[in-house]
Image 1 (cartoon, rainbow, N blue to C red):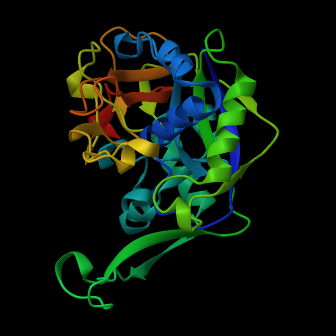
Image 2: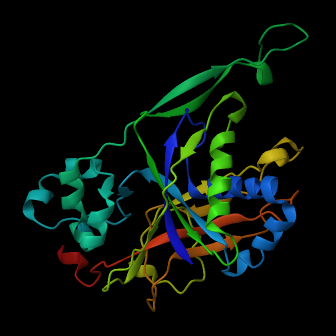
Length: 315
């Protein structure tokens, strides 16, 4: 399997964050709509047995990746940075090229020097639901409510990483369904114009495998159970996903999936026996009472990195 980097350009506000597991689900529906349900069923064969046909990352500002989820002791490389903890806590992003040149303990220096700020804004959009019997809004289901929108700068482009098994799903077909999602809209409220993006023609094959790597850095939410990981040298935060079916299934009487607990993007996982990987995690089944064949992406594309765990107390 190869990892490809796609470039997206937002064309509207977004009602749903551009996270990998949500985007994977909508890409699956796009495959159904363009190539048929039988083709998706074939692609998903073995999905819950470590055989994904594609693994989708979150979207990141072009040329940047998030800092790993590591305790502060890993970042303290000298006295000057110890005295600058407030500035370090605000740092969120590091250049892609810097992550490939140095071990994790040096990333803070590159991140602070880059001083990058992800230019996006959030705002509330207010809605009214009209009670047709009275012609007005009211209480309960007819009460006015607000939803959050995210706006990106017109010049802001986003990087998306996808690990692809080209023996099962062609790269050109993947580009087509990505374009379909961008044209139709991603996530919530596409019917009122949200979630639209364009896809750059150029696609880059990338590889993140330094020679001295000993751990994995995840680029999407993931489920790391039963993968032979070293618990003492794995660091992550968790999130609970209350998933919802997409496409026509979203209009069914039971559109919600079962809650799922995932490790957030940016986790560091260390195996008991290291080997180079392009993705990590598990494919999740049995997540819906109304759609038995539904799956959820618990896989994440990964960077292979080096972290000096033996000297972590001295950093």
